[in-house]
Amino acid sequence: MNVTEAVQSRRSVRAFLDTPVEREMLARILEKAQRSPSGGNTQPWHGILLTGDPLQKLFDRIAEEIPKGRAAHAPEYHVYPPELDGPYEQRRRGVGEDMYGALEISREEKAKRLMWFARNFQAFGAPVLMLVHTPKYMGPPQWSDIGMWLQTIALLLREEGLDCCFQEAWAVYSPQIREVVDIPEDHIFFCGMAIGYRDTEAPVNNFDVKRAGTDESVRWEGWQ
Image (cartoon, rainbow, N blue to C red; front, side, top):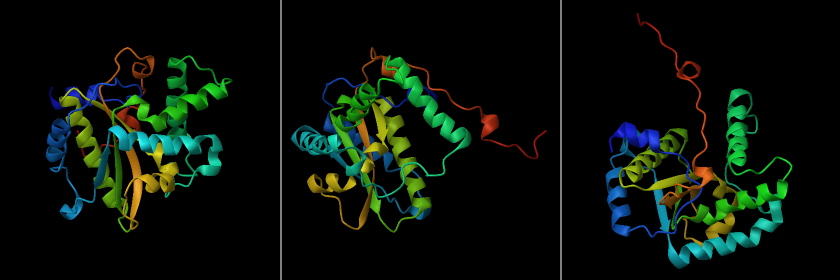
């Protein structure tokens, strides 16, 4: 698989097979991903890879919180800016509606939507979940570095026939995660990353994810 194929075939996978993922394969991918760029070579990323009993322990702990609704949420940062609007908010809402459309869950079926959203906290059935954190004093440039690291991992996963889903949703349960996973107190918890083999038959993995044209994000100056 070349880079273009990896980019074009990558998507947020929300239904995984229960096929185990070899530690040696993930170790190889993470070793390669250490070549990801970072300002001043700071390499500010940290990850904890859970599987088996430790992963189930996390699932069980968060399952206790889900019935409490938003009252249990305590993120360490805004997953989306409170002032998000315009095309950015339209895209966010649009992909959600497209996903629920693929699942044949209408807007009126709020209970079904909540049940589906809760699957975030089972990593959509993935056998591996990586939890990502970084020192609290790191700023936006270092968070950008972490994003480049995560994208590099995602493309290397595709090369090996694996898939992933970046899950900032886990951030809402940061205190509860810290109860069962050893994240340093002076680090901020960022996101989860579900890793495994894609269920190619699942409708949620096959709907079209619309992308804006480059004319909305790129401006050319000085070109003929």
